[in-house]
Amino acid sequence: MSLEFELPMVCMLFMLMLLIVYFSKEKVKLVENKFFEVILICSMGETVINTITHFLAAIYDFETFNSVFYPSINFFNKIMSILFATIFGCLLCYTLSISYKKFKEKNSLLKISLGVFVVLYSIAAFFTDVTLKKVGYVTTSEGSTLFLSYGVVSVLILANFIITLINYKKLDRRYMVMLYILISIVFFAVISINFPGFIITDLLLVSICYIMFFTIENPDVKMIEQVSLARDNAEKANRAKTDFLSNMSHEIRTPLNAIVGFSECILTEDSLQKAKEDAQDIVMASQNLLEIVNGILDISKIEADKMEIIDVTYNLKKELTELYKLISPRIGEKPIEMKATFAPDIPEYLYGDIGKIKQIVTNILTNAIKYTEKGYITACVNCVNQGNECTLIISVEDTGRGIKPEKIDKIFDKFERLEEDRNTTLEGTGLGLAITKRLAQMLGGKVVCQSKYGEGSKFTIYLKQEITNYHKPEVANTEEETTSVNIEGKKVLVVDDNRINLKVAVRLLEGFKLNIEESESGYDCLQKIKEGHNYDLILMDDMMPGISGTETFHELQKRKVYIPVVALTANAIEGMREKYLEEGFIDYLSKPIDKRELERILYKVLGTKQETKFPTLNDLYNIDIPLQKNDKKE
Ligand code: ADP
Image 1 (cartoon, rainbow, N blue to C red):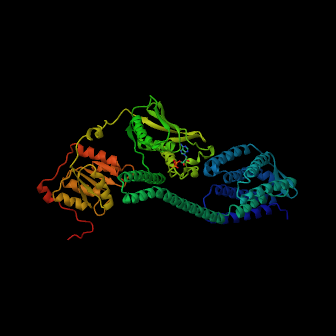
Image 2: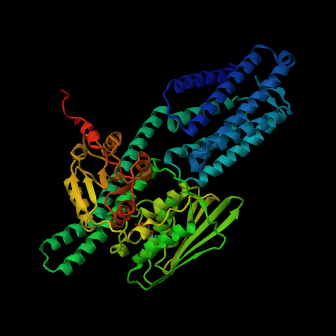
Image 3: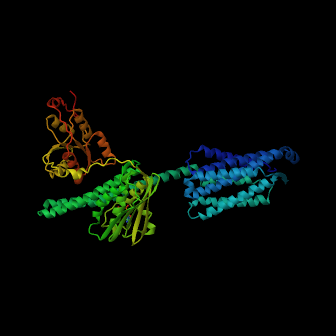
């Protein structure tokens, strides 16, 4: 037996079997699989061409074969050379994709590079030549085509070898098989150089494909791997949720402890002064609790992609000055000087989401106050104006405890709080900066932190905003104008299905010496109107069973009862105010009720002359109360 074509043929059959098995299996889609698939297909092509050409060489004598088949053999040799280079190019891409995360994620870069390489190689290959010669019984080839092929493939194998060695520690042990493959390639090369009559290339390709299939590229094993990876991820997500809950439980319980504890104290307290002090602490703890709840809502909204951008025209200097005024009392007794500067070229009116900008600045400024014991906090606003675009550069610098350089990236992660042991007296959830970073990203900007441990930190926010000339006419400062107005004795109806909430609202209103009435449902409210009660203002909870606040409000309007109605709701997500104002409510008050906000609304609505219109007796007679939803129609 000459072994002219038998070996390539056996290799071809083995390749065919492997191809059928591999492609008939269900596979997970991974970057490296694609490269393995190309290796398989090219190896199949290689063995087919080798088998055919050597079969022809076996049945014809060398002279005839050389003269008759030379042009096609020359062509097929070039094709084989391209396939060969593609196989080793793919093998290199395979190693790169399993070694480097960036290639795994951005596989298009590898694919494009491979494509370019194959095209360039093909062009080079067609300028080369091949000559046939007889070595023993076997016809082999030599010439520049082979020279090019061996040269390029050697470089690819060397690069592959180096990358595998560099990533030796990082790679999964199973992938060490790549080293074995690379070493066996060198072994096969040595044999084929020394025994050119031994057609060994196909054997090499088949063995590479089989070794890879049985070790690192088995679709079944990969599927199991992916399933267990998915399970691990699910478990991790579940653990994160549990951690989140236990973290939250701790954070929420801390202010709750103060609220419950001080409330108990008030119950048994005889001294009014002490009771007031306890109540003050309750208010502070409640505000802290509210901040935590808002933080959780924000982060979950951001993660669920539900956070909306609400652009408005605003005056930055005015908005931030007000914000600083609100935040600076948090410094309390600490010897900290707070300075604020605004660059003179900040445009008067900008267009963007000032709500979120304020939230970002609040988070950074409150942190500066929280983590600084003495010294100064400086808030500077600078800008770069180009055309109608303004890049705001807002920086907050403190002389606080600072952050270790290796921890700076971590502080923007969720629930990441540094030096927990030093933080025991400082409230916080570790959500503030995570929210800040994502809000800044949502607005197309970024937050940068520079810090020297033990000396202080500087947080800088970069945001692009639109410069605008348009501005809404300033609404007269109703607060100043109306607080002097007497609202005593005005009739206010509070509608809320929750007795405790009703009581809270009534208690808060009592301080204004109003004439207050209560209603526990929308139906009851409508009934009261039908009975002829008139009000100067209605505070209406929205989410009530049966008929909601909004529905009740519309029922009133349908019956031409135009009493100013303020929506009262615990649904405090962004955009709610706009929604209620659009519905026709005169204002919006979120729960827990902020006393100052309540005061503002009362003076705004009751202190100015509102267009209230009450139905005539005849109209009243015609008011029909909608059937309660659980009532049967008769
Ligand atoms: P927290 O609710 O704990 O304040 P943040 O996400 O706002 O959560 O901040 C994360 C961590 O970053 C804080 O726990 C703190 O360790 C650190 N940090 C934030 N701002 C400062 C600052 N100005 N100075 C020092 N450390 C800070």
